[in-house]
Amino acid sequence: MKPLSPTFAQEVRRLRNERGLSLSQMTGLVPYSKGHLSKIENGQVHPNPEMARLFDNVLQADGHLIELADAPARPIPSDHTTLLTFDSMFDHHRALGHRLSPEVVLSSLRPQVDALSSMARSADDPGLGRGLWLLAARYAEYAGWMEQERGDDASAAELTRRAVQYAARGGDPDLEAYAYVRASEFALYRGDAHATVSFARKAAKSRSTAVKAVAAQREAQGYALAGAADRCQAALDRAAELQGALGEKRYGTTSLVDQVAIARAWSFHDLGRHAEAAAILDDQMPLISPTALRARTRFGLRRALAHAEAGDVDHACELVADLLDDIRQVQSATVHIDLTAFSKLLSRLRPAAGREVAGEIGEILFAP
Image (cartoon, rainbow, N blue to C red; front, side):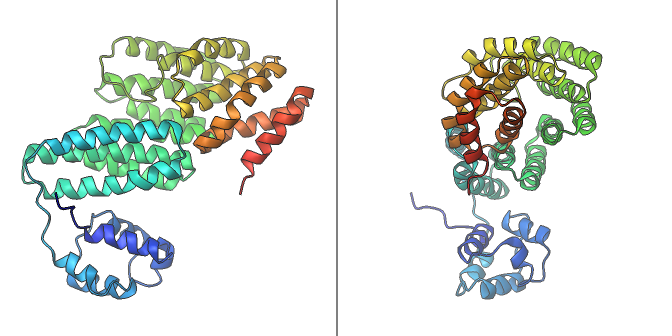
């Protein structure tokens, strides 16, 4: 089969990157804002002849962008093998996300978001179109998570908004509610208890039990950040009840067997109940797949922090030492938050067993 030619949007993004131009730099070359340029590159703005000539000149495309702007929308055949193929590819992207750096995953994931949304607009079959929009939503939501893991909260929020828009076009209202869960997670990692709870409560208004279950977990974690122990426990109880009522559809970290147990341990640690948190994580860590490196490093570090705060600093150092190679591999901004916390703890406690670990942590946190 002859490969599809790129769209105007895809080619503008490629040429801009090839020329080494950021979106901010492009605003000085064309009469469009950074936000509008982003919409152009995401295929949300259809190019008119004047726009095509302008971009063709600025990016030195020798008429190529003008031709792409004049080209009719690509019809997508009514072949649902397309959906199955992209669905299978998504599983591969998630598998890569468990083990590799966000940069590596996003290099192939973001173009797929653009391709799927473009194909959905051109689909000649309503059923295929809805399926493509839903796949685009899944890809965009996961790309948003990878952007958060890379430390780019603005891009993460933008992709989450796109996921909501695509899901609405595909007829899935649950993902719109789940976007509030993602916003709650952004706030959680910022240490903003009020925003964590506020966004989780908005998500809890969903009709989806799956969304409500993970929203209750985030609400509990938000209360724990603020030291509101009774409210935290009530939210955890609600989360456990909702999780027990779930079918196959779940949101949140798919590599966890018991999401509520992990949320409980996370919350207990923030509430100062470190020994209880450590005991829960000791039970849960063996249940996380050895290939799910991102989850193992995130919750493994929480486990080490809990043990250290509970008084077993030497054991905590051993746990972190076993995680360092995986931490280097996944390059997670959210994991680095807890790694920084562990580094501060070592600086405060100064255990003899922590000297070598502290040196390696410093190399990771301040790598160029």
